[in-house]
Image 1: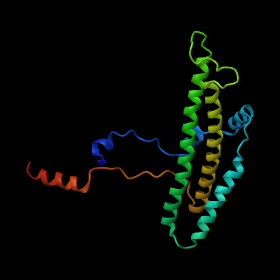
Image 2: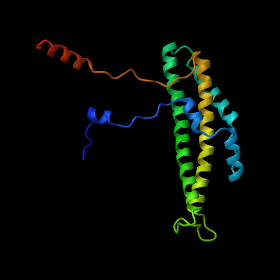
Image 3: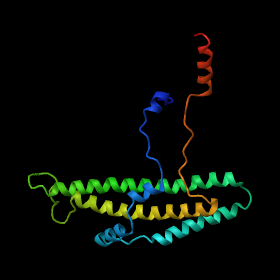
Image 4: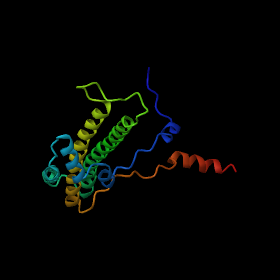
Length: 192
């Protein structure tokens, strides 16, 4: 079966992806206090936020220095905008996945507290319940999202140093009618 290209109607009907932004990543990823509480409750180690942030900032700075004069200012901004965007998108994606799994864990846990339900009861002795597995999974994801946020923060800090501007997500120019459509509309208006 060959895959057919999407029609313009199908492209228009796709759900919009949330805008990639460092502020959004910060909102959905755990902060220092949450990461510390989760780590303590689930016997996990807290990722070294400052260390991860600093190493990513330093790595991007060294990458910029390695280019020497190979890239002009515009090319430098474009290149590093994309790189930082990847880090921010990764943190935001991890934060979103963590948030969804945390909601599932809370839902499963609240179902266990309902005395009138016969399903989703505690697991047999020695085994984890679905709710307990979900809570542990959400805790692991919290540490991952926290670490990826540190990497994004470091990359964004390097971008400021490299370009002199705060990092902003790339937004394509508005997709209006194509030149061909405009031309065809102008030609057809001659017949009116």
